[in-house]
Length: 322
Image 1 (tube, rainbow, N blue to C red):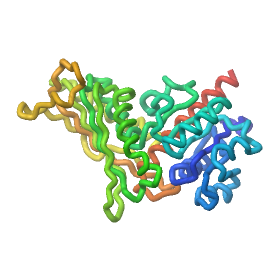
Image 2 (cartoon, rainbow, N blue to C red; image 1 turned 135 degrees about the vertical axis):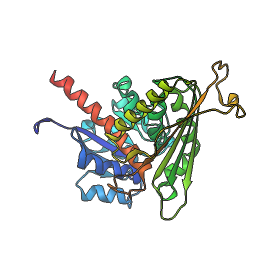
Image 3 (cartoon, rainbow, N blue to C red; image 1 turned 180 degrees about the vertical axis):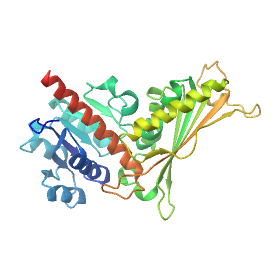
Image 4 (tube, rainbow, N blue to C red; image 1 turned 120 degrees about the horizontal axis):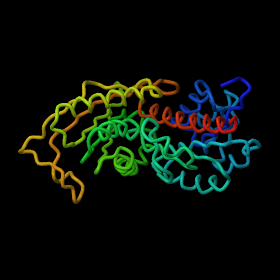
């Protein structure tokens, strides 16, 4: 991007851990975005204080304070890093004003977006939902398997350091499992999905670990090699915008033992019987822009949201220059 090209102005609602990390990413690494406002509700929050020190306009009066800010009309994209319930109110206030919203809560008002999988399908959506940290880490893997063979059932387990789970995360545990399970099917392509989150209290804190299990009908060894290659490529695609994202060990593909029936896991009406289980083990190390490296669950959310906003802004600039 040339120096004289105007950057797209963005605001962040939520001055907690996720919002503050996202602000730092925008200011340090974005090619197409400019921080125009940091919004919170606690005047003493560290996020608002950091924003002020970085010369970012701030308000502690929530979304109404944002709307009242002098530069509000110039803001095109608003990131929401609050909570599922708060996002419903923020969307209702901002959408009629023509703002594009990138939702980092499990509210799921807009379509689910995982940048490495389906961003192109929702380039023009006014509100996009970033699913959850576990969804951003695991749904690409489900999709990678599904583009080789049908996935009858996919189950993900996201283990994050308890210290990295703030009040918003803890308040949205139920929404996490429901939203992630739905997105495993809607974006990942599984016929049925299940999600589990574990808050690991270990000391010292461990980085994010994710496990993906997929049940597939793939007796052919050639299909196994295609699955491994597809997963490896997808890991590289995600790592392009989340550098700490990596395979923990080689992809495992094992036959399902005859004495371990899986029919109770399948979607209603399923006719194909899975023959193999694909097991993928991942870890996500944070970039430590604001929080320690063990907080990979926050890093993958903010990195994915930044990637979406960058591509929206880049596309808009291309259209303007066409």
